[in-house]
Image (spheres, helix red, strand yellow):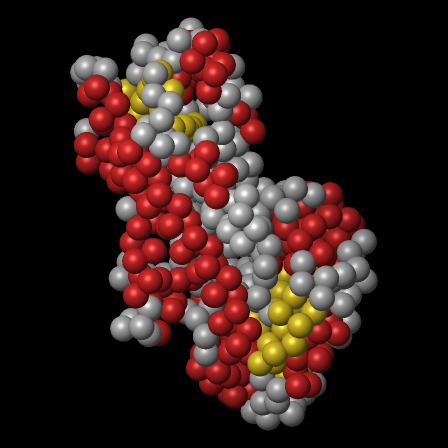
Length: 425
């Protein structure tokens, strides 16, 4: 297992490729995005991740990482491509299918194929194996297959690739053991073996648990806005109980996993997955709830034709990942309500949405309300005294509870927090 071919060079595939390359493996990375391939070849990042630039430079310079738009023969093939949902909330597995199909001409007897993408249970059995049978190899004897889902978070990918436990699900024992042996190249966490379908289920369970927990927090936030409670304080106090761990509310749930994976279970068992569907609907309702909160605050202050500054495009703090970002839905609902806005995110370098500003000054000039949707460090460090000189009206809605509220209030701002009706000015 000295030569690897990694299909998909995005947020998971590229860090995985450089990790293997910098731990002695020869790695050939593949992506259908020619621009991304050209950038990687020239050591230019197309995604943002802590420590990735240095590791990419090393992997290219030592000759262990090559990239192109076509696979090559290898000992191991790792598939790390998107598995999004369609508008009707069903799983789109065509990327997985096409990636699997693309390696069929290159697989040889004794090869190992690993799916890292998060997918609905039975994807290996129902999507990948039928494609790999076309190689003419005997599945499980000549060609070994497993699912080992990534379990990392953007911003800490390299730390978690090494230290997190790893689930390895093989179609048989030898497939699982070969996969476990490969990941022992750099994984220090526990490697736990199971079957492929169980491994698929485990990853979906992990993300669905978090989605349901966040939905509970969002419902608590909505209740707290009606009864004079600060939900952030209440959750913090409740979490002092040794068996309680409630997540925090927010303007919606984003990212390629938590906002997507629960729908896999709803699609598989629609009549049974009632709690999961309700949680998804609750979290999907938060962008509209947030936009209406904006409208209520500006109407309360009798501001006609308001303009607001939306701070945050990425779905989580300090990354450039906009996949399934709730901000996009918030902007849609602001458009529907006829509210003018500017948008700024220091981590999104290219223009992704209309009215996107290049800096704080452009975003805040002449606005009536500042809406915090992502808790970037840059937003936490924003000085209210400086913002005060730019804005037209001093209103703030902090949906992430990340600002120094006392400091903003001292600067004359009316600060509203999602889920807090206890501390109104």
